[in-house]
Structures are given as C-alpha cells and as structure tokens.
Amino acid sequence: MVLNKRLPKKHKKIQLVTYLNADSVIADQFRTIRTNLKFLMEEKKSRVFLITSPGENEGKSTTVANLAVSIAQQKEKVLLIDANLRNSMLHQVFKIQNQTGLTDVLKGAISLKQAITFTDIGKLDILTSGPDVSNPTEILGSNDMASLLHDVADMYDIVLIDSPTILKSTETRVLANQCDGAVLVLHRGKTEMDKAVEAKRILDLAHANLLGVIINEK
Image (cartoon, rainbow, N blue to C red; front, side, top):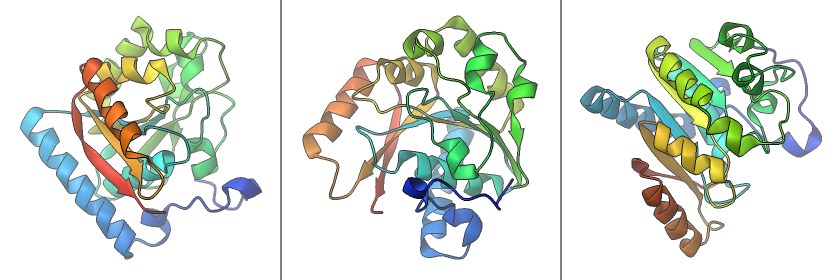
C-alpha cells in the first residue's frame, strides 16, 4: 500500500484509524463489530456483506475501509469491493490507482485477478470501482456481477462491499439482495430518523438481510 501520496485536500481527514492507530478506542470498536460479524459468519456461513447508508457524507466508505483493515489484521482473507460507481472513494482512502477495477471485470476487459490490488495489510485485497460507466444500475444488477460475488465468496473468508447510498441509488437494492447481509451506517446528529426508517424499509422491500446499524459520530 502506498502511503506517501497526499489525498486531495477535501479528503484529507479520511483516516484508516485501525491501521494507523490500532490501540485507539475507535479501533477497538471496529474489533467489536468484527467479532459480531464473525459470529454471524460461523452461524449462517455468511461471507458477503454490503455496507450502505441512507445518504451522502455519513461515513460509509471510511467505516467499511476501517472494518476491512480490522478483519485483515486478524489473518482473515478479506476482499474489499468498491461498488459505488457513482462516487467511488476507496481508492482515495487507500491511496491506490483506479484506472482499472470492477467495471472492467464486469465488461470482460480484464480478469478479476488483474483488477485486484494486493495490499500489505494482512490479507486485505481491494477491488476498486474502475472507470465510470453510464449504466451503473444495469452493470451491478447483471448476471456477471452475481457470478463475481459467487466466485469471490469461495476465494475469501469475508467480502465487504462499499455500495452507493440506499435512498438515491437503485443498484444498492439489487446488490443488497445478492449479499448474505447488509449493514446500515448512520451519522449521529446528521442522519434524519425518517431517512433511516425509509432506508430500512427499502432494504426490507429488496429482501435484504439487514444485520444491524453502525452509528458513526465523526
């Protein structure tokens, strides 16, 4: 993982706390979430989890990135997928390239192995979003996406997906239905209660398995 490049100024506050300060209180909270997911994995043989939020700027991408690092630090083989094709963030969080990625794989331009970025954080691999596409709903709802999720579930101990926001993006509903579980990230003091309720309703309509909520305070 490259750590010597600066993020654009507007993203400078994004931090991998679980990597840079593993002894912090926040890192310990992520370990608790990791433990809860591990129990679910053992009980239901779940592997693929979608992380979403009702709206923008609620800490979803930072949350899923730190969770992925926390799990990888325990020697679990983790794949982190950026499926937010409208506003991808994970390549900025980890400071890696995004010239190729998920969209290239789904279009058959490159193989999954060619698209994955291997990090030096435990066994954490990252599949960035790749080049922009004009039809994110169609490409994420395709049989190719379903096949990819099936394949990576066999390759990794756990797969975490950073998805678009649930209230604005139709593709999140399709993805949630294809995953073993979904987690909703809310921002304390920012996420309005009616939007949180609406997000849960939409996930229920999509027949998603809502596992729980992560309250983000930063």
